[in-house]
Amino acid sequence: MKNIFLILMLAGLISPLMAQDPIELSEVLLRGKNYQYLDAVDHSEAPMTVQFLQKEAASFRAEGGEMFEDIYDTYTVSFFIPDGKIVAMYDVDGRIVKTVERYKNAQLPKDVRMAVKNKYPEWEIVKDVYHVNFLEGRDANKYFILKLKKGNETMRLKLDDEGNYM
Image 1 (cartoon, one colour):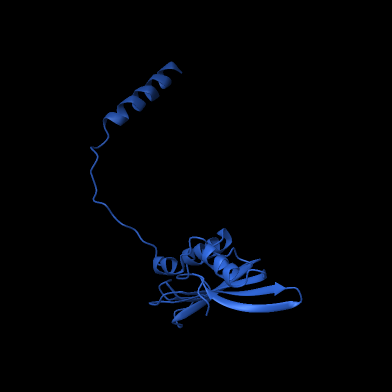
Image 2 (cartoon, rainbow, N blue to C red):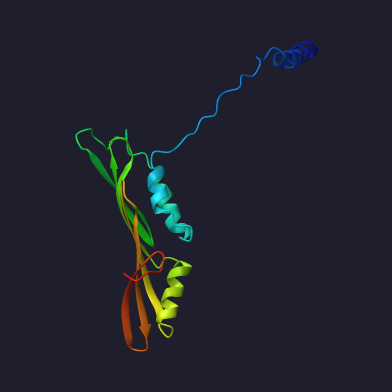
């Protein structure tokens, strides 16, 4: 038993001495296929649920799956959470070509809240829907549709993500 223990101990001590010299490799920059989509829809003030769903769509592997055939140029995949959904169109290489996104009661950016508060100070926002439309090669179209209420009156507004009325 002692012999086996000594042999294992010597092997453990000698093996690191026989390791090769480390080789320094050049730096490699890796980018996901859908970084352009994530850059276009980036909204730092977006709620975590919106960011989560967008990252899920960007990291989805659309190529090589059983349900995909090479006879089509694009494939449509839907992603759902209770407060939102994304319908994403992927090309045969797995890149996002187009998305249509809709989120209910998303956290409004400060610019949007301030624009509404300044123009309609006595009104209350009772409902909001955040829309994002992405098309490859273009900036994402991001806007909010708000429902305001004051007493018995209601009003609908459409603002971009910077608080500009549309």
